Each structure stands twice: as C-alpha cells, then as structure tokens.
Image (cartoon, rainbow, N blue to C red):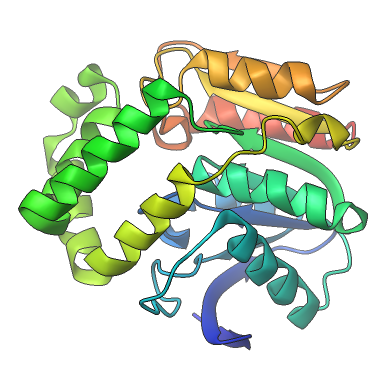
Length: 262
C-alpha cells in the first residue's frame, strides 16, 4: 500500500474505483483493512480512498499528544496531497468524530457526511468505557485493551459465533499496533467535545447506528441527528458498534441509498 508524507508523518492509504471521491476514516484501534467487507462495494460507484489515521495501521505512530483537531488537520493534508478538492466523508466511531471536526474546519471540502457508530462529545457512559480501555492498556498491555474493545464493539452473539476470526484479528492488531499510540488516541477521544458546535454543520448527513451498540449508544447518535439540521438517522437492528462487520450488506445499502441522493 502507498504512503505519502503529510506534515510530520507518512500516511498509509489504499484506493479503488473511479468517480466522485469517498474518503473513509476508521475508528480507534482500527486500520484501513477493516473496511474489507464494504470498501469493494463502494468502489463500484466511487473513487474510494481509505487511510490509516495517525498512530494506527501502516501510518507513522509518533509518541506525542494526539487530538481530534489534529486528526482533522492530517485529513486536510491528506486530501490536498491526493488532489481531492471535495469528497463524501465516511467516519466510523473515532473516525466519525474526526469527520465532524473536519466538517467544521473545512466544510468546502465535503460533499456529504456519513457518521457511523459515533459521538460528538463524551458523556458519563462513554467516559467510563474509554477509561476502562485505558485501565486495561495500563494493566494488561495491548492484548487486554483489545479484549475489552471486543466486548464493547461486538454483540455477545457475534463473539460467541466467531471465536476464530476474532482471534485472528487480535493476532494481527497486536502485531501492528503501538500501545503508546493507542493510548494517545484514546486520550484524544476523551478530550473531544463538539456537542455545542455541530449545529453549525450544514451538509447532507447520514447518521447510522446499531440498535445494540453498548459503546456509543443510541442517545449519542440521536444528539448528532437532532443537532445537524436535515440529517437522516438509520438504525440497524440486532447489531452493535462494529456494524460494518456484523451487518455489512445493510450498511452498504443504507449508505449507497443516501449517497445517490447527495
């Protein structure tokens, strides 16, 4: 996969397809390979570009404070370097937080927003979840962090039915992730608060949630939906936070239906 210099780091990315750009931004602890079930479907219709966020995947992982605003700056530099003047922005979880910040920073570069399993601020529930992740990282290292993420990100039914794929994912993530960088990114999430600002966003926006998401519950998505005037809110039944894995076809259908109107 190619890497390009953006400020003080080199960013790893992948792209497929042609047409109007669709830029995909993953969440905390993720990387671009997580889009494997859905990116090929979008690439049939769009120039689909996925990047590894600072501190994740094949992108550089400097040991320095991270912030959602800083991630937004990285995204700006990335799009400029790839000569993408305007794109649909698809953000998952932390990536959705980055997408909201980017919409406030550079609305002229966005055709539409797709915000999946995400949040605009950290309430008591989310703070407890992120603090549990930090505690696991401190006490048991990255493997313990991953185990806690699994409990937050997947439904119990999916975990019980997919021990093999989850074990393979853990092995891969242990190999590529930096505990220090993941801790820095977790702190960035904890410090994020756009609750009072996102009403300024005046872009076509789709909010997508899993009904059974225990990491970013429905009330966080509802707050985004109510704040961004004219936004659409789609709830997928029977799935949790990682609905792009548990319910990939339904997510693709919802997003493509929205994009065709945008």
